[in-house]
Length: 383
Ligand SMILES: Cc1ncc(COP(=O)(O)O)c(C=O)c1O
Image 1 (cartoon, rainbow, N blue to C red):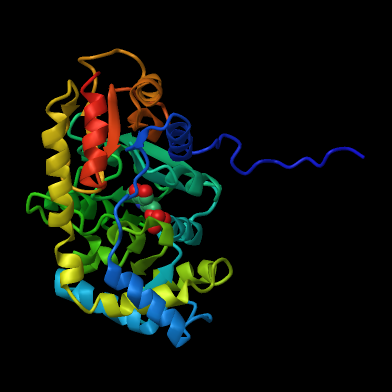
Image 2 (cartoon, rainbow, N blue to C red):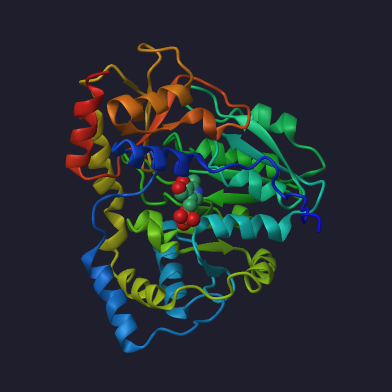
């Protein structure tokens, strides 16, 4: 019998760099500042609320669109922060993480032949999620070293096939954030077009230096044509929960739910119940930016002892450092050597570009315990 042949839907996809660097990190007993996850404990209160929800009996399917009290709490938070009213019944869907929400959003709107504008460096799921739907990613590089958007270039790449633009602020991997002017440019470029905005806002509250998060939720006219994706895991220091949500206009959410109902259908019940209670206390999210800023500042201060040069970061879990004064190795080679010889795992930025652009920079995750950051820097000083 001949072997079964399948035509790969993603012929070029390998193992993600996060898995590769984390495995290398374990193999060489390195400090893992590569993958974006906290190594400190999440809120004890939230853990207790989940335990309580399970004991109370919230262990069966909840509504496919999400547990209503959680969606109501989210709608209240949106109104409090962004002064925009969203209908929890028709505009919010709880998902198993933001990656899933982004995939679902793209699947709901894309057809073969469509084009999607993606800014690079980009979170690694965007392009495969576009391609699996038969569409094409059209990339625009953020301008090094500030990682800002050249809107004239975006304009030059828009045509009648452009179906969506993906934005991400605060940005992974660079920590850059969009300004009010960026939003204005986006508004101008998408006005009177069929372009839908997919806004990845997983680092929503994790913004520093008193900058304001330019959420699409602040702009009802843009929300009308957007699918905005969030992650509870990222914001509440529990990435392993893989729980998130999407907010959109009613007509787009209808299409989003058509995909969602036949894929995940219903998400983790006890965690939704717990979060619905946790979110009632605004203190649980308003201080998150300051909490993480302290980590960024501490890491930056420690890193001054090294030969690495910091690029600015205004949000997210991440800080980019340039090593171009030390070596002209490729980012990948340098990151591998750093892991093997110095015991610190990072992520080369080139892996966030489809063309493998090398600027001699690495991404470090600073959402770690003080002691983890200290040990990592003790090793990096030897560079
Ligand atoms: C920009 C961005 N989007 C989405 C995600 C994934 O979020 P989740 O774990 O909720 O799927 C990440 C995680 O690293 C991210 O950095």
